[in-house]
Image (cartoon, rainbow, N blue to C red; front, side, top):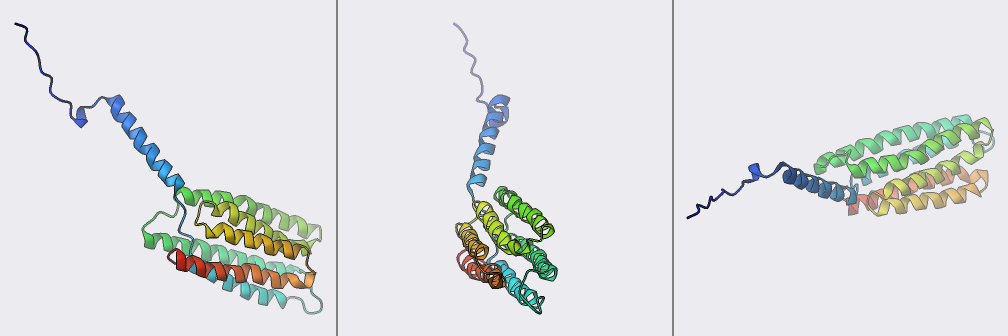
Length: 211
């Protein structure tokens, strides 16, 4: 009579290495897919409101740079560039605080995509500012800022909550108006865009998406 040898069932630790590696690859793919499909929700509404208030203050100070007639002076540009730097610090700081409060990583894959998609329009805006200033075409600088900032918010906001790209579109619309408006309107439109829109959408983001 032949003797049948019964082999013990393999435990998970004894599973073939190839099968274990394949399972890990599948889990990694699922995790990366879910992370890619998620939205970057750390955009702070109250941070946007703080940026809006900074812009309104900048608009007031910039208007005082022109004592005789209205035009975009070097002092006007410096005021708004200083406001842009302060706004960048506010944006990064408030996003970090919101992400920390939610226990979520700030530098997640959606967060990286948001930054990488916002960066090219911002870089183009900086280069065009230098080029337009050298060519003495300073009246074109404010609409360029509004248009490219709006474009960056749209492209970067594609990886955030839905309201963020809508805000970018509104910035572009204000930029179009500034592009074809009299020079005396530009500071008001800058205040309406960087001040008013940040305040309006900041309140909406704070109420709908947790601060």
